[in-house]
Image (cartoon, rainbow, N blue to C red; front, side, top):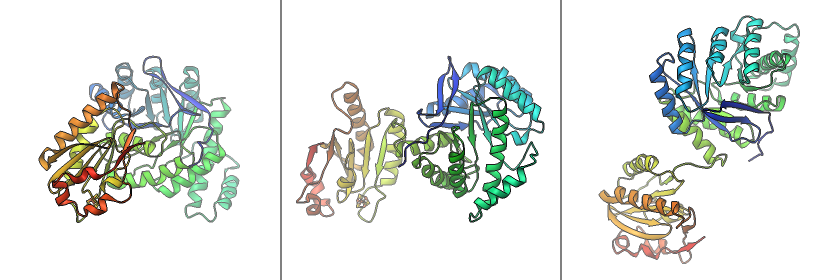
Length: 417
Ligand code: SF4
């Protein structure tokens, strides 16, 4: 894992919704975008609140029409999170969004035909200290005389790359756009260069990171449904973040955007870039040793615990006693299933051996009680763990059926870390 790349720091927000920073030493922020119509104020506010409660730091809304920017003023008064206005084609929408008190503008200069119009937006944002995210696409607003020459230079540089021409074009466009902003002494800039191709996303952001010191907004665009979009997004974003690149991100799914927020946060938790909120669930994939309906149990555990537990408890749900304890090492609460029963451990102490239909209820009770103890200062997360010490008692247990029934799983040795 490489150190985070040093960037400029851009402020977003206000006194009412709070101020956040993108870039520098600030945490990597998670964004999403509303899917409904912005002009439907109540629905838009409710949607933004769902994303905020799911953990989003910033929410973007589209403002294609005047009625959307009219609604924006009221929406901004009602929400508790910084809002970004996504502007395409109509520079007036950006000016109206600024007037409405928006906290950031997302603009693709290539989609606005007149340089003076872009300048008007830059000046309005500069006056109000509102940052602008610049995205790249195939469009262009300015014909630079040296553009072809620059493309040729970059093209040679990327000659061996499978998307070399596109990569060169994206870099050349960004250089061109950034120049417009810098010419007006505007530096509250965040850059994005999204693509549907995760490999290109990795390469283009790596090149941008080497060329600019502005914070970067990461994303794989139009990634598809969550089933495939998650893989595409994780492949690109995790690679970049592990390489120290990226200051804010948006996962894009053709499904409920709450999943975008949850999965964006999970990437950051997994890479140790944000302190985890809520449970960390470990579960076995099951195999021929399984003796309970583990998939249903895991689904229920995830649903119930993620809404009722606020501390980052590590919870393990294991299908049997053979490999379970080793794989559940470090869990605060663990259940090992077998022979239609579940044995529950809380920080290494066996607390219950219950029939399958009582596992969920008992596990929830133990998690809530343990969380309450932690909150009262009577226990610490991750303080004790299950550990197997030689001679391996689990090996002696074999499939464990008879011994589970006899309660002999207490042979698992437990010690404080
Ligand atoms: S914990 Fe048991 S049931 Fe689950 S995968 Fe491992 S051996 Fe199989």
